[in-house]
Image 1 (cartoon, rainbow, N blue to C red):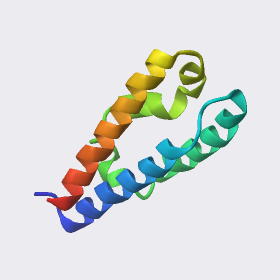
Image 2: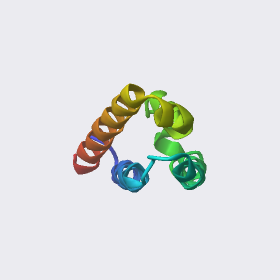
Image 3: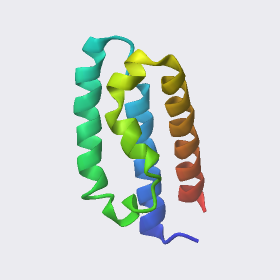
Image 4: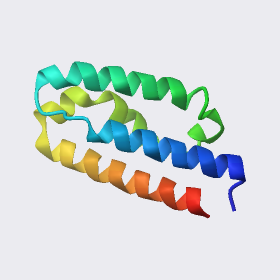
Length: 97
């Protein structure tokens, strides 16, 4: 069972990822805002979320940095969106244990 702090961190990461994943990424103009918000999340990931960051899958880095690919490749975008929904769900489950 995760410690209370770890549970809170998992919940906070999930919450931040929900907000990030809700941002539109349909056209090139969207990517600047998306990338800025992803950079803010990455900063938190390696500072206030550092206790749990090593437990997150490497694919999260791709999700945070591959906006250009998601804009060009709808299949890749779908796979990454499915991945992030699954990760958010897992983090929320961990935060409730």
